[in-house]
Image 1 (spheres, helix red, strand yellow):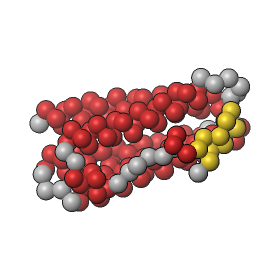
Image 2 (cartoon, rainbow, N blue to C red; image 1 turned 180 degrees about the vertical axis):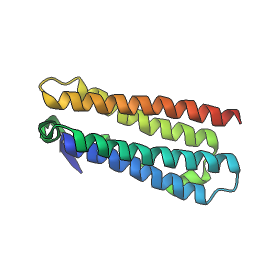
Image 3 (cartoon, rainbow, N blue to C red; image 1 turned 135 degrees about the vertical axis):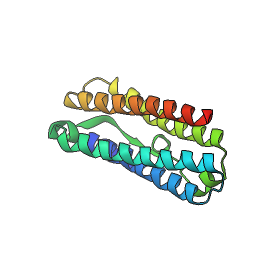
Length: 151
């Protein structure tokens, strides 16, 4: 996959959250321990919510920002996310949390690195909005996961 425009980046991000939700749902179906199952169900719902929010952002974004070219195409390892529902079915609660935060942090790092690049024009605002969304939702997710760990 090659990402050259902002719209493609938003589509990739939305797809990543959708895929993560599917993996969490699949993992939850195979769980018998209630805390891990509850965490996976919550995470799946959170990822679905993020996907819907990204769709709304894209719907209301300036078309020029969506069509703006990124300074360089994104490809390969930068975009690779190894997501597997069966793996989540086998992980402990701490491993699930670590894995989800690692994925979210990779997405945040990608947006941070792009937002700092010069010459983005209208795309800079859109990338900044996406960065804020990802950061905010990751913090919110961390708070909820910590509450679940306290149970």
